[in-house]
Length: 270
Length: 128
Image 1 (cartoon, rainbow over the protein chains, first blue to last red):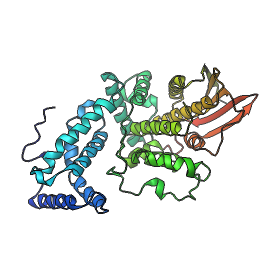
Image 2: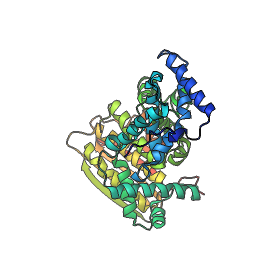
Image 3: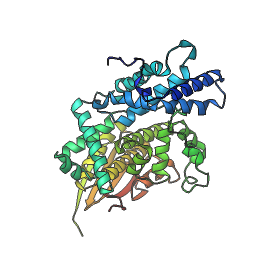
Image 4: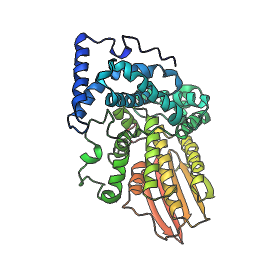
């Protein structure tokens, strides 16, 4: 990575008018005056984050050939953006986007480095996984349901064994934990756990209140949302993928990971 | 009546062998033309069922997993030597998870052996 992005017209704000820039400065200045626990912080911070999402997209695109879904990179990049908003010091006299860029890049790289491919999945498998993930989305679109292994194999002109290998490798890689719980930018809807009434069918029969609820609450927002959608709202993995905006493969991976976490926490060892 | 084919696998009742059971499940369900959605669901289900069985298994005992494929339907039976002598509690989150992942799930204990039986179809019922 060359890091030559700090030029005066930073890519994320290229299309900005003078007005936009003024608004950004005003928002940052206002944020700087608020106490850390001021309830107004959240909305202000969200607004600044939203303004700069194009920058995150731009930076994530630089890594497009590395075998990770763009959406996932945007998500980790957004964590970098949020950190930048929290740490930005208006006194420093640099543009916010200039300040945020290295932090966003840092989060994306970290995703690759220690969370992403920590199991060192060979490059061939990473590519296979991506190819299959893309084909799964395409075929799901055209067929209105997720494809079978046979259909994937025919579509990609591969053997079924190869497709299976790709699907397996998807699980082999321990996915990143978006443990910036509560600061997840697409968590603006009220947490699903909380929006579920205690009379919600199915929940009264499980050991919900004492054990599960606090455990679910400790999961990152997106993982919790996926758990709720799959197990309490009976949505399919593909539906959830559409709704949450990640690939079906990623939904599957997050489900496997969250269930493992919950199992451990609830004392079912294995 | 379509002819059924059966696969049986016996492994030590230890979590390190669950991966093997999961991989076998993928391969078998691929044969039965499962969609990726259903296949991934069944992989989660087998993880959960094995975890439950292993948690209750007598130390040093085996886990027996049998898959029966009939057309596009797969039935899986997970059997272990139960130390509690009780079937899986159905008021648990684990059970809720299982019921959401497969078409049917049953549990019983006979002659000291815990059974968890699951049935799943390869294609979502909303398909085309």
